[in-house]
Length: 434
Ligand SMILES: *Cc1c(COP(=O)(O)O)cnc(C)c1O
Image (cartoon, rainbow, N blue to C red; front, side, top):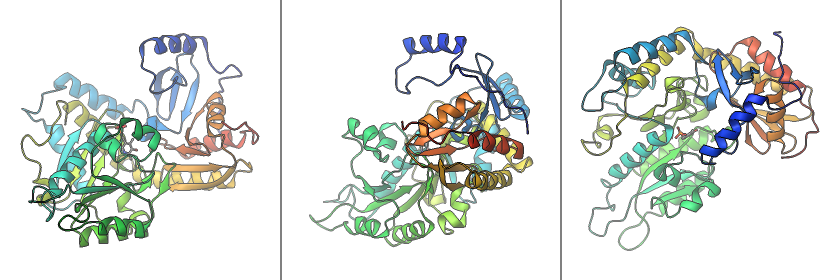
């Protein structure tokens, strides 16, 4: 096993302290105080400004699919920067066109499917929500019928879709959503995993003065990442597909965290054990797609749905930016060439099996697929565990009071997983609760 350099008893070095002081003076405090100030990375490791090295099992929150400074990614971005970095959407570029075609293919989306590019996960979901609204207006009983009512969008309890106002409307966590109400109307929450609740929500549609508008769309994650890496359940997804079909509603799957090989398939809906083989009407993607370049978007499955967006319906200055598209093409290319989807499956299994076998009473149970995993802790001390791990050279994430999340780069090696496990084996089981 490789040598493990720890950051020693002092949690923060002099350079970290100095920069964090400056950070606070000029940044709005939406993220709290950053844990460290980072300097550079290579592969699965990143170094802070004091020269401390960390094994990264968070990967910039499931973003750094290729780890840090992958030579092919660096070259693709540098070459594209030297050619053309931005054009606006009055013009197109080759990388953008190739990336869209590649994403449609990897998603197994049918002939006639189309991509909209944005710059983040939230923007992918904003696009999906706008598309669902246009679709909803085509349903009988919905606006703009005489006496029509707004079509509804059903989202899941514990779901996360982003922080912009539209995406926030479908994001469940009351503490992050409620201060900004009123949000987008006619977005309702259904208990995740509860088929009867979903059925009831569909059945509230009524005619005349009675009942609500028709359901335009159901939006959900296959694994609720921010909720603590919780699969929503294949039976529920199948039931949702059937209800959507019966009521002519769209099934939108948010693959922002689960997509791009993360769960051991290109997209999580392609895992039978997560989706029951269901095919969605649209998926959104972001995080891993460009290996660290901000990019996201939406794939609408099929010609009819895609055609609802027409010139002026939606847009963004940076959408499909060639630098991001080149980063995306390099990322997808390396994932294919290096077999990283298969690696995600194998290393994820090693990680979960290893966590389950740890002789440490702190770790109670494991869950997840591929390299999106969590371990349940015996008591709510996730922040204390993550801090301890950080001080011992390992980055993991306190995703819930009693759960740690793992989303390492897809290039993670067998030795990396062993190193992560050996650090975690030493976590004191009696750390104080957060
Ligand atoms: C991270 C995330 C988002 C939001 O993505 P941003 O790039 O932060 O806007 C949306 N949905 C899911 C499932 C996510 O994990």
